[in-house]
Image 1: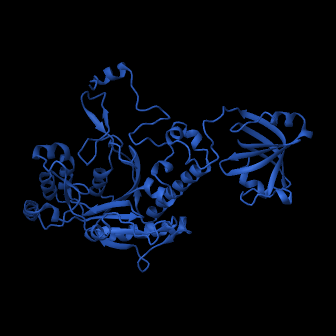
Image 2: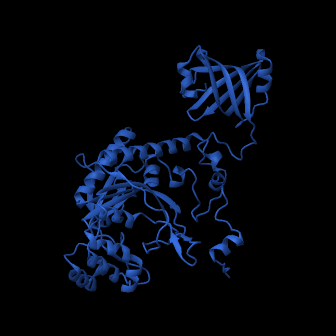
Length: 468
């Protein structure tokens, strides 16, 4: 039965079976040394000329060929020990060799960290790029963080609930990815920018404590460190308060840092995450996601900060107003009358029950107490320039639901990809995706987006208009 490379250290003197890729080959006279790589690491395999046919077959081996070997594990000679390798004190003397698959010469070296290689080339051959140790470790770290998240919130009596991937197109800040309906010609679904409305509907449904590792989609213009699809740690709670949610997230983050990254140094304020208002952050750091590390060159320092008291509205370039977080955030006003009076006087002075968590200059969590008052929510939409008929058409379903006993509720969501990138000391989030896209949304490996057959378009009732 096959074992993994890292198990060989415990098998000295025993016959083992290994399988994996040829990471490197070294010829030393009548000895051939192969570094065999599998998902657990690397182990050295030795082929001796005395073995005849096995040795002759080994002479043909090249990097990235897939092989299976059987042999005895032995201790390396004292002068040949590799202290940098987990299996550096042992080697396997091969008695049998089977070539499972040959390989063309890869377009780049998969043994380096990969930073020196053109990124578009790496993305085109991502299945090869993922063979490098650094990216494997990133995906393992991502798995551990997701597993920790599920365990933490499950232990807090949260229920993990999946929400739909195809739903209604609604204005939530970014462009929707539209999905045409074959059965309802001329109508479209949209991929979710976030599960925002569904998680609020779950609160109305009485679920009370929801979480989800949610995939989200936003058709944005090229904006640096963004991806067309990304993942959120999504949380919603009924009968809660801003302070209760912030305490929950503080406990989650500190537990995660200490359990999964014990070698990281935490910058805290009397054992707690530093808190400051939006106004103070902008005044002292000129940013709503301040980097408060003592030494910004220290990759092992984690300095989280909670930001509160955001403004409810912000002016767009065209002079209209938009919500800083999203329209479902509860403004800090008594009622509809006060909202309208303050908006008429000075919209920028209206505060919101909005809060963020920043880490080393990156936003990693954002959330709010939700506006569960249908009249106040309608007033917010009107203030943002939506006509009553549009509000009913786009949000009538949730306003209708609010008539049937909605509990006060709030939530928060984290960009999982960004969190992993920071903790893994990566320069961008593409390094922690298995299959990332370019900044303009292209998948270079799959050659997507791509044209589709005219028959498919005809079936959907769609005709294309070429841009001039």
